[in-house]
Amino acid sequence: MNDAIIRVRDLSKHFGDKIAVNKISLTVNQKDIFGFLGPNGSGKTTTIRMLCGLLTPDHGEGTCLGYDIRSQSSLIKREVGYMTQRFSFYEDLTIRENLSFVARIYGMRDARSAVDHAIGGLGLGDRQHQLAGALSGGWKQRLALAACMLHRPRLLLLDEPTAGVDPQARRDFWDEIHGLAAQGVTVLVSTHYMDEAERCNRLAYISKGHLLAQGSPEELVGAAGLHTWVVEGPDMPELAHQVRAIPAAQHVVLFGNSLHVSGTDGDALEEALSRFRRNPTYTFQRGQTSLEDVFIHLMHQGVPS
Image (tube, rainbow, N blue to C red; front, side, top):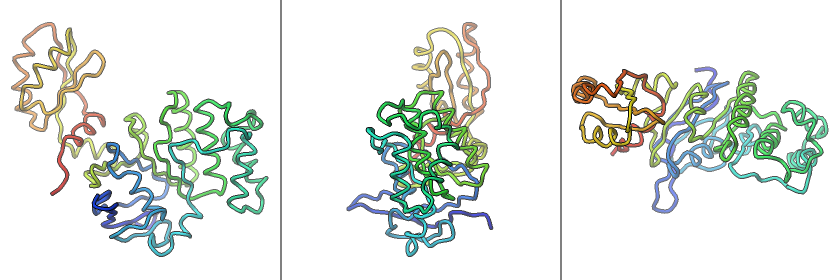
């Protein structure tokens, strides 16, 4: 594919005796918003750092932005913006002062113009003289994104960027991400939030260093092969306890006042639920399998031997 920004094969990374990433292969295309999902310690961050040249793989090969990830990592870093989970700016400096400092670190020739562009592009103009330490989580997040975009990178890496941020700030942040993608920026983001995963056009699920699934949200839902029933009625926790005893009910999850029951054998699941469906206090409907259902299903799958 001519628009591939990242193409890697069999990437592996060890830390001592621990295998952090085991033979991961994937392709990321220009303008993708590519989400990495998986439990803590699954290898998401290690994978992202190898993709952009921040870590050298022990095995495997590939390219990022047309550069070899092993021998040309310094060239990759010049065209990548990396936003970590932790706020890492000077709280006793203003937004503008922080961005000016970052611009000098990059050695940008026209630093003032770059800072003006970043402030204007991310709506920071009214707060540019406010101290970073006085900002809310959402505005700190926007400052961090502005710093990442100062040097106009072609690839943006976001490591759980909305952790601890309120829902409105998360929504505003994702609007900015989609705007950047529309301008041609490719985005890699690790997240635990399913609503954020649904905002990605492609996803990869990693567990214990293994890539278990990748594709669009629709492809992942289809490939999981899950059949889902949604149950509503009284005393859902007690019903969940009873349904979990059914072998065909592989995943039984409470969502507020409803119960999602999923399994890969649709006929067996329907038959097993029939005795509960005779109770008129419950309503049973076939449901659409969600990314959350797929995520839980993948969490319970074993990694390849």
